[in-house]
Amino acid sequence: RRQGTCSTALHARVQRCAACALATMAQAARSHVEDLIPFVADDSPLDVGVRQELIAALGQISGDSAISALGRLLHAEDDRIGTAAARALGVCAHEDAWAALRGALYDPESAPSIRVAALRALCDATDSGALAVLMRALEDDDPAIQLEAVRGLCERDEPESTAQLTRIYGGAF
Image (cartoon, rainbow, N blue to C red; front, top):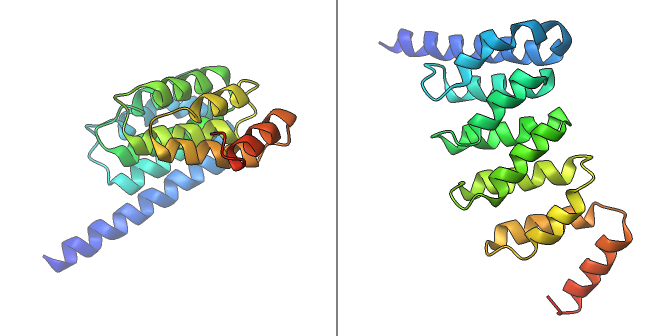
């Protein structure tokens, strides 16, 4: 029995390494995206850590199929999977990815951790609408979203960010 547990853990480590390798060879792996998608789905028999690595690989690979699959994972049963999908979508740097992230952020049914991860991914993105998203997030009812919005504003070197942070510091928030 103990040997089976060790074997299972070793197998999961090997799977994680394979997923990392796929991420580093994203261009070559692009033709295999459709083969990878079933392994990240809610009904996948893979370990959560392996699925998270595959999700990160899909973010590196990008492309329409990967972005579509990652967008669906924002609503996964396991919040860890949805959070990984949000991070991966942020890496994609594509308008469809950003639209999926905004959808998760503004969806009141999304788990708080997924909403925060979506906002963080949008903050880190080069999306031209990120500043407007951050400003709107400051008005959110969830303090974690507000805090992430402040973090995002701190990282932007834009006059609007500075003005908003000054307003918050001055107590006009």
